[in-house]
Amino acid sequence: MKMRSHGKSVVVWILLAMLILGLGGFGLRSFSGSAKSVGAVGETKITVDDYARALRQEMQQRSQQLGQAVTMAQMKASGADQRVLGKLIGQAAIGEGARRLGVSVGDKQLQQKIYDIPAFQNASGKFDRETYKFALRQQGYSEQQFEAQLRDDLARSIIQGAVAGGVDAPKPVVDAYTQYVGEKRGFTWAEVTESDLTKAIPDPTDEQLKTYYNDHIDQFTAPETRDITYAWLTPEMLADKVKIDDATLKAEYERRIDEFKQPEKRLVERLVYSDMDAAKAAKAKLDGGATFADLAKDRGLTLDDADLGDVTRDDLGKAADAVFSAENNTVVGPVETDLGPALFKVNGIIDAQETSFADARDELAGDAEAEKARNEIGKMSENLQDRLAGGATLEEMAKETDMELGQIGFTADSTDGIAGYDEFRKAANEATTDAYPELQTLSDGGVFALRLNKIVPPQPKPFDEVKSDVADAWRADQVVQAEEARAKEIVSAVEGGKSLGETGVLTTKVASIGRGGYSDELPPPVVSKVFKTEPGKPAQITASGKVYVFVTDKVIPADMEDADTKLISGQIGKQLSNSLANDLLNFYATAVESEAGLDLDSQTVTAVQSQMQ
Image (cartoon, rainbow, N blue to C red; front, side):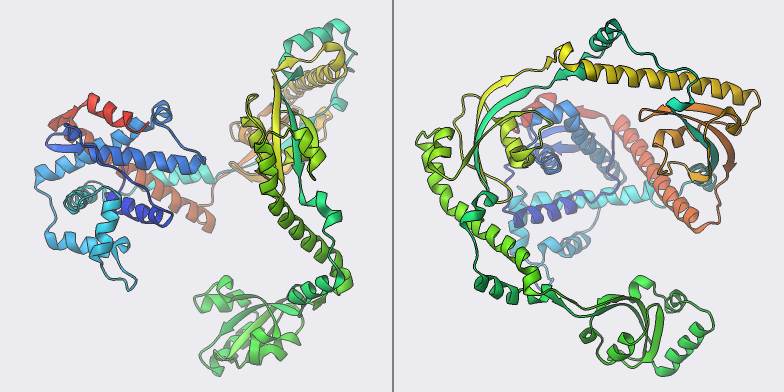
């Protein structure tokens, strides 16, 4: 049974609800059958409405994540319905524990909690009762229901704090995890290639190729193919009909002049001081060998805080002349500014850039003509749709309009031409042979309509047609097998006392790499196996179609005083502490449930689910 780590579910639901309201809202109806609860832990009930509301919320969250509606059948298949119920049982168990201990919150504390929820406040930040009522109504709550639920949540949070608050993972455990994560390895490796083989790969016989073909038939099977006829029209197809005159392009050039005439800029960092003496003292420290980062640190700042990005003369005001006359990687100042005396560090010089109309003309024309073409297609769309609705075939559309006809054997791997559009791929995958063509839009402003003629199921390609591909695949497989055998010989030689280099392979030494570290030259499985191999021991691995041998040279313990290691240790400690806290809550909830008893009404649970299909 999984538990929520904080007893603030209602507040989170309401905040989420207000977000959804801003997007148009949704309704949760109350389940008004004779059963009022789906179960109980002791005397603490799990109401039908609470269960329905939690299910609906989970379904909506999953739908948003997947980008499509999630059904109750899918919830059941993934076990999500049981997880939702498990959370509610856990909450009820903690609530029952609070009830038995007499833990509750007073009206004043409850009222203040409600007043503090931003979703119930007006524009001036004060609690607004009408907003409060509206939000609750949209979520299917009465005021009494919500306040009772919130009171229970607050009581549960008190129990949760008492049971799991302040739980810290033991330092030896945190240190052990940190040492494991922070440990590094040094190793020597080599890729075993075909040139390292002692025997050449023989040419295959036809019988060997046919056997390989049959044993690997999936590699030589054509995928499901959808035979599709389509008609389409894109802005590019109308290029010759939407030419723009120079007068219009020049007007557009002037409108976008800021894009084509950019003043010189500087990449600048700035530190402002309270007075000139403080600024001069900082400059003296800089002249004495301190860095700009040191000066920022003295002020309790980072270089990110001091970074102004790229600035123009107008951005700098009084300091412009001093900064723009300085060389790159120099510090200017102290200079008086509107904010006070300041030091400026110049990190980059960006020269003024000007693009003439002649140089910008092609870009301007391309943009303007594409926009005009999109508008023209928009104007045509209604007529095109009417023609299709009136029974015009795609072939007739291509003859009678600007649309062009095409044919494609569409598969999951198709990306050329119209198959490069997501909209077409989606429509092609969803098309049925009995559907009539409908006009649909493309991301560039174009339109298309398609007809699915037939679906050709996956089928093996004839051996004679793919014999060359079979031979290539057979040979590649034989090479890897031979390389693996050679790698085994190399490992044996190293175990016998030779160094990896003495076996004749080209070696590379890695001085240090972290667990899960990235290498430009090696696939991740190699690095992973290095950390599973004892120092001094050779090993081999095949990864990404290549064969590698290596020897782990040394183990580099984690530097527990390193700043990065300390950061990792803090994160590990936090995760372990949270895990321990959740475990304690689970143990407590299980104990209460065992003592008080769990009563579930499976028929009511099923009834609630059936109304949310």
